[in-house]
Length: 193
Image 1 (tube, helix red, strand yellow):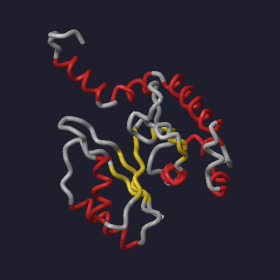
Image 2 (cartoon, helix red, strand yellow):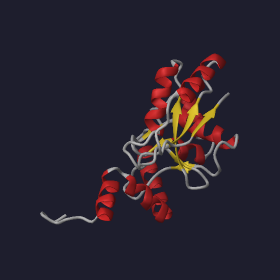
Image 3 (cartoon, rainbow, N blue to C red):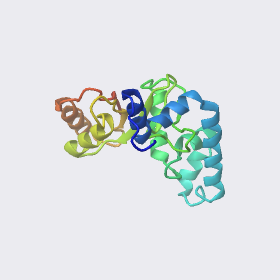
Image 4 (spheres, rainbow, N blue to C red):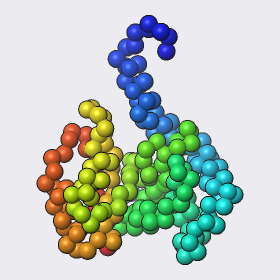
């Protein structure tokens, strides 16, 4: 941007999108083949760097059942494999909580753009592991689901509650239901055992 140049409201909004990482999501929507190619490149780099070899053998065995598990578990931002996250999103897909096929969120800037996954409708989702403490759990969920600024859209969230007791699941749902939701809060869906 040239010094002293005045931006139109549209240009300011676009600049803010870029600053907030939203532009990467838009690019992923426009050029999915390129984003997919770059994602697979990054995944192969992680494998060559021995990231799979460092995993617990049982976790590695789960990943190696099929390529899709490997791709869903690979977090391109951290270059780590998130097995529990992949298991949760596959369970959510299997139970029709989200439309298949689910794929890892990734864009041409070689990052996720802030989300974990994209469903079959092109909607972005984060997986959040539910916490036994309902107040802390609700804080964690809403940190993702609520918009980061007025007028923005929060992220859609799958709350993985498979490891919680029935009483803990109900307490977390009750806590979330009792909290006021900001305009633009993303959708929250619960993955139960």
